[in-house]
Length: 422
Image (cartoon, rainbow, N blue to C red; front, side):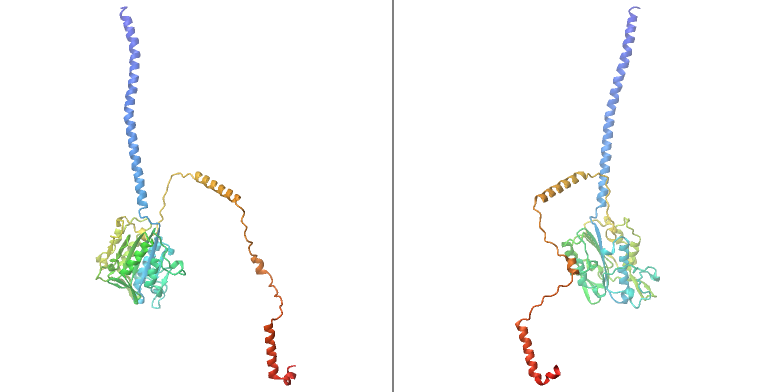
């Protein structure tokens, strides 16, 4: 028993500490061994989520600034005169109303109307131009700014506006002051044929002249992207000769087809609009500055069942996919704003500017002071009394002239007439 007690004591005293001491390090080792993979997994997940979020933000920023333009311009041209071409003026004013509603200001719109239908004596409603029957929609409005009117609408003036080759005296409102970051909408309507568009039934512009004008604009860096829309007979022939980059073109009819009118109004006595522009206007009425509608939707606005003619479009010169081009890239003026949470430290820049300012002051102190000529006392000169002229005796020529006059007088009248003189 004596041998068992110490053994029991030894066992008890040895087992308790050894059991307790052996379990604690084992649990710590197991916990540590399990925490390492978990921490690594969490770190990998955080890195992956962070990279995905960063990539998503970059994609959003790239999509946000994808168009690459900073300003929008519009050149809207009606080339027809006379009352029976009322619809062509209504076409142009309808597009003018839409682009202005979507944010393009008058300062960035060049409006050319070959005739003033609003003030035509045949107009039953003066100062109005309607695009819908029963006089529902007045597209003339109260604040229409016509830049070129009547006989100012010529081929020469149109080409000068596009290329910037205008006289220095031309007012700012008649200039296309675009640059290489400008998206330009050019809309034209009137009577045309295969490869030409008439201006006021007196002259015409050809598709070659128009293509060369666009090439000059590209060479002179006057546009970033250009959208050309024409509503006329055989309109597709006008964009066949285009060869400059970043141009997208739409036409109301193919070669050999007529572009038809729409909505005759018995009260006015003429058709109010052309079919193609009518459906384009209805489409634009559903657009707002935040719309995500793209150009592919615009291509489908007037199928042959509605237009009777076959609308056409050309996109091979355009670098972007039309489905990625928003309508507001050309018909609106949406300001691009980038929001950043990054803190920018301006202290270093201010210190550099302050040091450079001090250096400039030291240089000025070392330099000799400049001597400036005194300014003329303009106020004193204006308000002072006129100086009296000094008298000078007459010269020999004047005295001789008077002597000659006196001699002729006495020779003519003689001494006998002296009594009548004195």
